[in-house]
Image 1 (cartoon, helix red, strand yellow):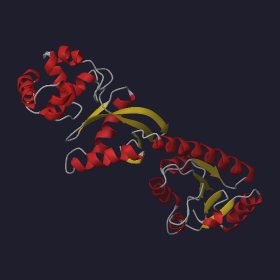
Image 2: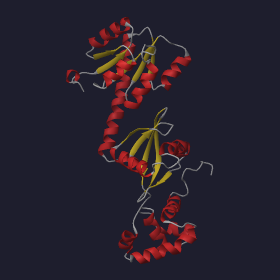
Image 3: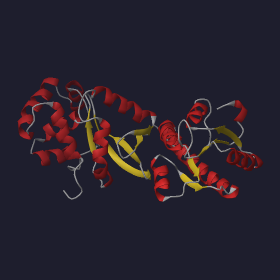
Image 4: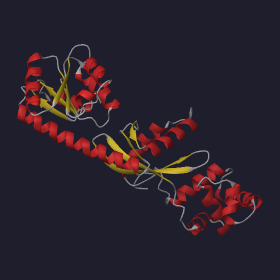
Length: 308
């Protein structure tokens, strides 16, 4: 943040109307709020390269870049930034367009200073709560991330981002992409059905957690439960208890040698159990076997419709 504003609440006003700019600047300055000004969307983006305000007030119709395009770009850069549209356009389609572009609120001109200040306080308080919650998640090493309904990543805690980046790197060129998988799965996720994703050396599931906005969904990455009783796999898949123990650790990405150490047997014995188990569960490799195990661990709830 620019040191000139480090001790002040900052509002960026994006408007090409001198009268509006003058009135808003006077009203906010009277209560100790620092005001930055941009005359169009492109100027606003240039300002954001240098300073991150607490709230953005945005006109809809401006030269060079209008408010709608500007809001879409800002929302990608700063997912939690409060964006309040303030415009003379009052038709329903104009209001809907503003919210679809990423607006948090909409005020019709002429602006009433006290109403504007109340909206600014409300949205800045909400944004601070979300920011504090996100920072708490970051500090607690939670695997949480947020996407829109197209599966596009809006933000992620560091641990979740690392795992997502690793998955995307391993899956380069694979179809469908992660965002497509998330978008297709979201309705089922909201109905309580987890999404299973396989990587080279581990397997994890994505669980729907909460909808935080009309187009923002909190998701949590987790591993299959390591404390699960192998008997669940034994009974579900009609395999021996020892094969179930081996399969359980396969689902957790363990190598044959690691499984041998855990179960106190030789790697050759682990491999023998796998060879005997594969035909029983209808697979021919450990990745497919792990997928079968995850489905059994989750009770089959992997991206299936709620009525199944």
